[in-house]
Amino acid sequence: MIAAKNIYKSFNGKRVLEDISAVFEEGKTNLIIGQSGSGKTVLLKCLVGLHRADSGEVWFQSVEYTALSRRMRSEMRQQIGMLFQSGALFDFATVEENVMFPLSMFSSMSKGEQRDRAHVCLERVNLINARKLYTSELSGGMQKRAAIARAISLRPKYLFCDEPNSGLDPKTAILIDALIKEITVENSITTIINTHDMNSVMEIGDKVIFLHSGKKWWEGTKNDILDAQNVELNEFVFANSLAKKARGMM
Amino acid sequence: MRRVFSKPQRWRIFYAQALDEMMGLGISSLAIVAIVSIFVGAVIAIQTSLNLINAPPYMVGLATRDSLILEFCSTMIALILAGKIGSNIASQIGSMRITEQIDALELMGLNSACYLILPKLLAMVILMPFITIFSIALGIFGGLIGMALTDYLTVDEYIEGIQYAFTPYYVTYSIIKSMVFAFILVSVSAFWGYNVRHGTLEVGRNSTRAVVTSCICILIFNLLLTELLL
Image (cartoon, each protein chain N blue to C red):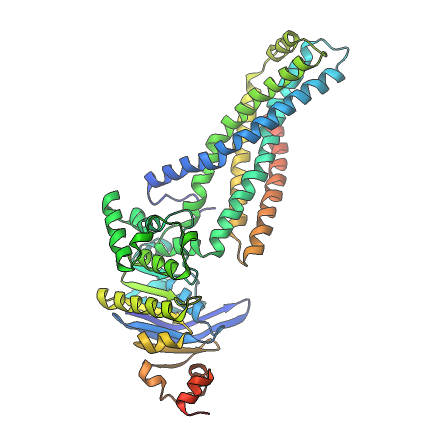
């Protein structure tokens, strides 16, 4: 379980997050949704500690993450996997070396064991045949899958995904969503996904938090969304004409 | 800077990285260092012989040797490497910053500053004295070629000059300077690369800033060290 309590964050005097409190449940895919510029990525980065919140607390289980020293936070981060929007794979390494990287840094495994574990992760994301390729040789979907493999290589308790579907075609996006969902359930990971893709919300969103103008505007399950009476949420969810028609708004 | 000088996560990986950086940054620069040193050595010898018409012949070799040891092979080579290595370091780290690779390192629990910068610092500070000595040797050899190809001086007179009144401390001084310059060029370039924030354009801008700032710092420290050490 991850809990955010009264998170505030500003950049150059401009408030980006205002009083965000939320609980992200274990073994579930928790989605943060909202328009571009609503503060999703900033919230995600505050949760993992890449941004320091101006005020507020982030708790991982019973540990107050925001109060930890840099060293303690580094240790804690070994339990966190993150899928970045760009994939953030190391371009100096092959896919296999990318997946082995966290293992070589933080595990006591031998080289052979690291390779075996990397292969298990790459098998899981169906990328074992691309293990010798460099990241520049991969398609967008393959990069995301390689990044997922790297993120789960150390068996994290927490998985953060920043726009995992951005730049992908709908079919590949669904595959990535399904993969994240399966990994979450298999390993009882607390997963937080940042997205504005409504397909993802309806496919894998166990719990959904809607941000609007840096504030938490709505919270519920994917089933609640369709009946929600929140104007901003409805405008976001039923933004395209097809969705509007489906809801009988046109 | 404090984060750079932290204990590496894995010493074995750190040493391997430092070795890679020695190859990538230092050894790959030997060709340009060699070419510049030979030609400049030849030119210094010829210019000195032209300007010391009434002086004893050994003065040409002596002046060429001391110019190379005291100034050219530490300061000029550091300035040349600031252009080659400085822009390389700044753009490499800057690119990693904007593609979130540095965030990925941090999020794994690694000290990204230490992981990325310390091996480069160690590699260059260790390698730079050898590059300087290599440059001195080739510069003096270049002077010899210059004398052999022209008729200003005989080769024997030049060789006599480079052996005359040799002060070993000048080499020590040159090596100390080269190590300080190596530290400056890596740390300044890494600083600009690490602090890229706003996309690819800034990578280019910061690479240029890295080279310019490194050069200025090298020149200032050259003056300070000369005043302190000579």
